[in-house]
Image (cartoon, rainbow, N blue to C red; front, side, top):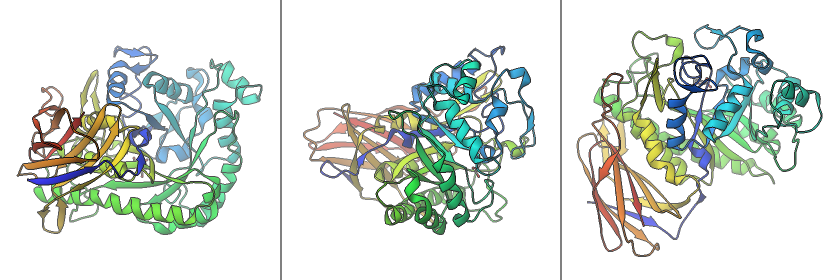
Length: 492
Ligand code: AHR
């Protein structure tokens, strides 16, 4: 029996709902087909947005959506995507498969999508190949309520009221596809761009996010914080999980993977904690008066594309292994909610660790979707410290604790989310709640099916949450977590 303690006397603060954010890029079938099918499609839609996808994302509890990239953001010129659709410029998507981008999904469509989802928009501006004026005009176009050239143009294009977009990214991966810059050079650019990112309404202050480090590039975070930390609200971090493979070019299959890749994927996921702690420490060390947060605005699994699909589209299936990756990452973000202010899994539909896959008019929910849905009670709740008695499991050099937990308290009760990483053995959990009063009831749900299990088109969904028996004890509850599972317990 593994003992866990949820400590009601210790909290790192409120879990920012934006930790449960998502990411949508003009990449493969994410936007087109996956989200946007156009008003004339046979697929049921509202103003071009797929009804099935919008409804599912709302049910999952999507608080925020990042757009238009990714690498695409630093080639995107927002004026190409406004005005009458028939006269919008057709461009080549040079990052992703060299396909034609007809710009039928632009700023107005993205804002309409966010309206339907009831979520916050997060726009990444073009620093790599754009100009300061272009970026500044985009903000004016979105946020200016009074008289101005950009506001007039927006009105002419059918949108009267300003959208007041709060979250703006100052480029993306400036160290790579966003311009191959040195951090010192980027930091100076970031200062320049940030200067012209204006607030048009005191009640709606914009939130500026600097393009951050790749994985463990701590020099990047330090250099950007030292030089530009005073003019931004957050710095980003990108870290994708892949298994250990013999050749770097191979990322391993998304399904039918060997046991060694299961454990190396989980072990590599746990590295996120070290990254968050180290980047967070640097941010705190170099921040001045202005509090700067960490936005992990790209994370998730990155495997080989599905056989027979366009390599530039990054389409992969999603198994219980992905569910565990999601559970571990979300537990880490919850447990570091004093540092992580936002996180965006890549990407929302049909790309990398997607929560939804589509095939023509059909849609399925991946195991990762269910983890987000099971964890949604953490959004905006008070994080509670948790301690778990774990055993080390794994294969070869890829070791991981068998249990991974986070907890929070809200008006609904105490939510404990726990993952059993062991692919063969169940985990008996004895969870005590300390300083939280006498528990009156407990309800459990579990997601499982074996570590390679996934939902597929044309078959009944096999991975979906099911009730899990949990027994109240004097000070908490006990439950048995099946091998390779994610569980959520709500204690009242
Ligand atoms: O998510 C796919 C790509 O990964 C993004 O476009 C880029 O930012 C990252 O390298």
